[in-house]
Image 1 (cartoon, rainbow, N blue to C red):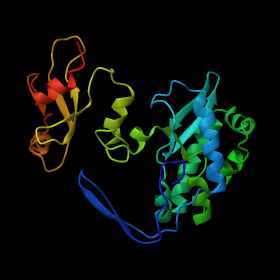
Image 2: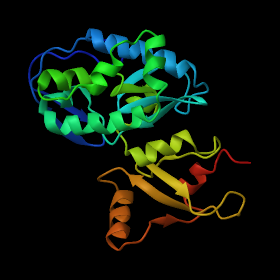
Image 3: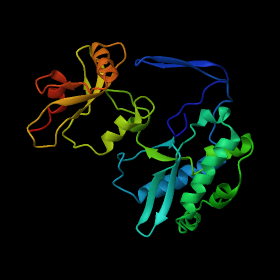
Length: 259
């Protein structure tokens, strides 16, 4: 296993699954190794995130999410913004070079708007940024270079936020991004991920401002196959939110840390 927290896999079709549930077949690809370009981009990412502590996603150690992050240097220091799309390592094998080049062009527009960025990379030892950013992507080799570059493999996440599964953590690889994002900005005494009556994870949010005395919650996510999921879908199909009263066990879990 590399220090990204992602294990190498043999060259064969293999199932991936989780308890949510889902099962997919992942196509054959060569055993994964850390390319020299990736090693350099990861070193740069770690140096950059050191300047941004405390980090919104949590403390180190960090795994490297291939999320299309763009580190730019403004007058106030380093800032991470997200490009329109990121390429997971295995997704490069189905990537259209022309479409990935459009991602590169968008990245170039953003990075070039912050002229201190590339010199900042170079000062930290990352010398290939300008060449990668300026080189059109027209083949698989170009896609591979982009995939492992600082313009794609660049989002530092603690393991729970990256690949974590409840109850240990709610990671982007397993839960919807709009919900996982809430973990980065919610009050510490509000419990986002709760457990339904069947012992399955769900996510809820308050329906009223803090201090209002209204303890109702809105269901944001429910585990497929549960009664809560069926109720959530029924409400969705009726274009209505599924709101639970403050007396409901999920609402009580959500606010249990508040005094």
